Amino acid sequence: MRFQIFLALATWVSVQAHADEKLAVLQAGIQTYTNVTVTEVTATDVFFTYPGGMGNVKIKQLSPELQKHFNYNVQKAGAAEAKQAENKAKYQEQAQPAPAIPAPGTAAAAVWGLDLPTALNQARSDHKLVLLDFTGSDWCPWCIKFDQEVLSTPKFAAYAGRKLELVKVDFPHRVQLPDVLRRDNEALAKQFNVGGFPTYVLLDAAGKELGRQTGYAEGGPDAFIAELDQFGGR
Image 1: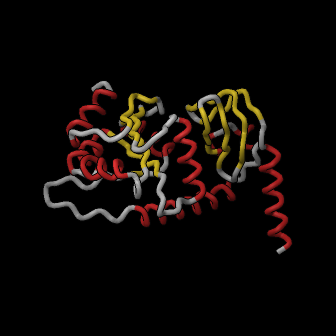
Image 2: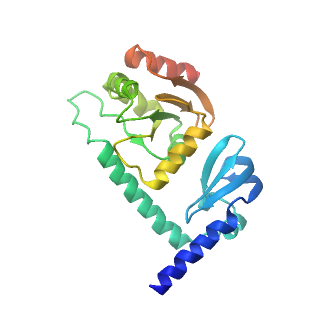
Image 3: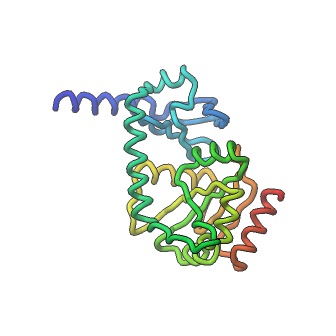
């Protein structure tokens, strides 16, 4: 018991030691942030504010010097990531019922991920774009309507399978998000200056915004697909 208390105190001291720390540049993989103010450090992530809003990066993506600076521990980070993945999986299962088996000759339902860095990595590998769906999935009527009329259709699923990695950035009322996912979603909403739901943001594989649709739009999947193609220059 004393050892557990000691570890908790040590973790708290580590987090507090970096709170409000300022960094002129923070490089994580291909992403570069400037004028960063650290707000929190966990076993896996550095959370911060910068002129573009709020953000977070995985410590394992930082340079060896910064990993050491933020007391990165591979074993602790691995255990924390496993727990985060478990919590996200439970949320996804709770919030999104298993899709029905498609009829022969029709496309399977579109598959939505929850993690932008993973989607960007996959998009780079598969030469795709990334679509962010900022939604209140269980309370926003226009989100639900657009999901039924567009995002849940076989036509959109087939299109997404060829051209998109999908990320749902959800702000539900009746389902409790895991803490890490909630913070990630809040940071993304600030980063992309999202003020209402639904908002659909199309990114290239480097994370650059190509275009967005704010709110519900009529026209079904054909109109939305045409809009995404226009954003992507196709």
